[in-house]
Image (cartoon, rainbow, N blue to C red; front, side, top):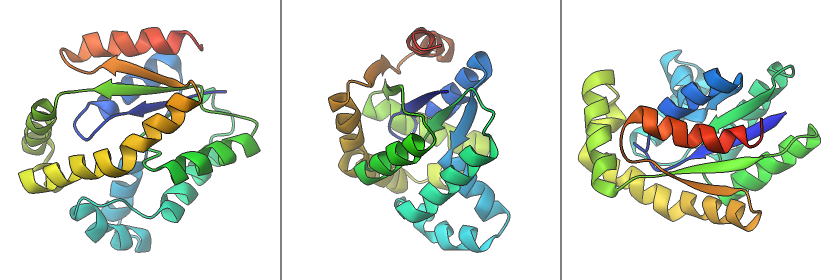
Length: 191
């Protein structure tokens, strides 16, 4: 089993790229954001709990996210590997993910970090709001807060995987297909 983290700030394209990588390399795409939005859309108890947290641009508590991820991994025991999109977001989550994978005789092979300029992130998110109707992408203040939360709380995760020599920076600027090819070159090293 091979496992990759696709990492980057909100608007970096990690969701788009993760879906394409999963298709090309026959991996399972796990997006915590999508899983949480599914819970909200289904009006589950979990969805109601996280709705206000996400609307404010804050992070959902670790125990909720980790339990969701573990359940998805266990339900796909036959998978060749996983692409984690939007997880882990803190060093505590990264360590919990590593422990959970180790319990399943697996590990994170590589963290792919999409690097995108700040104003491009904001432009992409505002554009996405127009196309997808996502309320968390329509408000510049919420966008700025999400990017700020990423820098404060999530950027240290990159340092965690850098120390483990599993970090790879990828230029996230430009055409979607060019970015995808850059990511694919890195993934091919492990497949």
